[in-house]
Length: 462
Image (cartoon, rainbow, N blue to C red; front, side, top):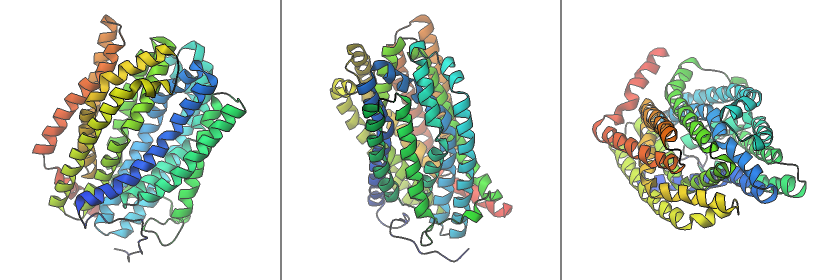
């Protein structure tokens, strides 16, 4: 093991101290960070809908699930490095932490270049496959292509963030996102509101702001007093570390891509109800994104907490933290769901004043909101599994239930009963089934020893 580097005061060792305080202390900055990150695309929708109208709003909305599909695999793969780093940081093996950091960033650079090419070249093909309304096709293509011209920044920022989160540093991503989100809003207002450049300029604003976030992260990572400091000359793939990263990250990447693919199928069926339904679905998705930020914050904190403590061999402590995180996520989700159910007309009308858009958005919100507790439970247990090195488990469950079963249900219902309400019900139904499966796994499996086999394999490889 290499000599220990000094740790700056933003890094947090979660193997000591009261579990619930540590999880809360990590989750709050993550929540605020995700809140500002959510502002990126939401401001695009709000400003585009206000200045450019329903057609342009539908163009932005039509690309949302497609963007998630194309980016989700690479971002999910970054989770594998985060899990690896949190495990070695918990075990105080800082040499392996450094090797994992450099491997993740090398992987992010390659992934970002590939993602840019795929996103820019295949945009029209993807959108035609999704049956995008011809009236909004040109605007959707322009938005999507400009957005993916900055794909390298998207992947790099998520890599930097996963590294910082893995060592308990959830504050710096917050600081960077506050600045870049405010920049994004200002550029949106300038490009769309003042210059009237069109829907593509909203994507340009997001790309510029995301690039600024990456530059801010890079300045921090080049400092020598941090546990995750980098040396540009050392950016390369470390064989044993890369295999471990891929073992944890590929299931998360596949899981995200599968969910993204299922959402594209859902979007395709939504598009069959034409542009008002597309705009309503996109507007509700933005609201749900905000609504679920507190829950996502707890799940990210859980993954880091579990990873560090299992890496340190603190099994009972990991169990106590997991129970607190799961219960908190479920209670928060139900409280947020009640708020969404009551105020959904107000929230939807912020994106569009069209009565048809509002009516459809409210219908979806009031179908799904009371069942957020089920979605929260599934995500929380999945976070525990990933933190324990059991990333294949949530991948398998979500592939089977959130993709295969959900898509099958929607395709059958749309074939026999072409009513949009049945698409909305696909979500609560599949959330409930996955929650039952996750509950059984959490209660009856030996998830706390998920790293034991992996550590032995890595030692042999070295």
